[in-house]
Image (cartoon, rainbow, N blue to C red; front, side, top):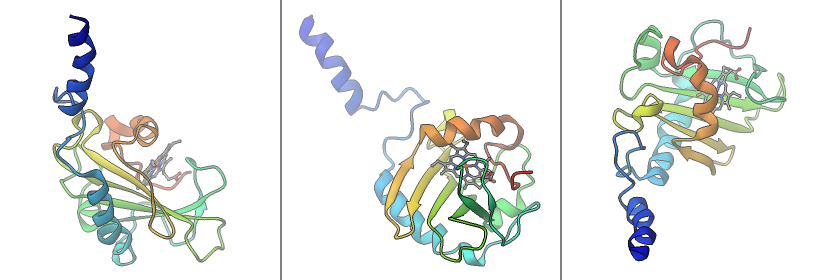
Length: 163
Ligand code: HEC
């Protein structure tokens, strides 16, 4: 019995305790984050902005000291922030040291992956340093904890710069 009790958490870990709410264990988070660097950070200069965003970095509400600009892909732009964002919809937030800095210091990305993490709106989150190294990726508690404030209103997406 003791052995079973010890074994259970191990088996649970291996099987990712697939209860329908845990992140999809079949998704290779590192590989996905590497692709997302190319597909999102490599592509956002051709994307659009929404709401009151402009190309001038504004002080972020989420990262004190950082100035940010957000970019949204076509799927994000076509979506009206009502209901659920479409699979693949992606946003990139570019972080700068100041409003006048020209070189980004980091990037945060959210992309919709249907079936990845139902408990947190099926968003995959990632933060990259300027050189592309991954700080965090996957179902990230820090990201979902804060974006959860708008989970019901606009599917975890803020959509606008801070007022
Ligand atoms: C403390 C709260 C907070 C945390 C933590 C946070 N965010 Fe955000 N996020 C915001 C706010 C507020 C905005 C709107 C712009 C701003 O003020 O920076 C935003 C905007 C964004 C955007 C632009 C898309 C949108 O929502 O309109 C992306 C992408 C993003 N965050 C990704 C992330 C990722 C990835 C993480 C985790 C590494 C993260 N955020 C952590 C609050 C947060």
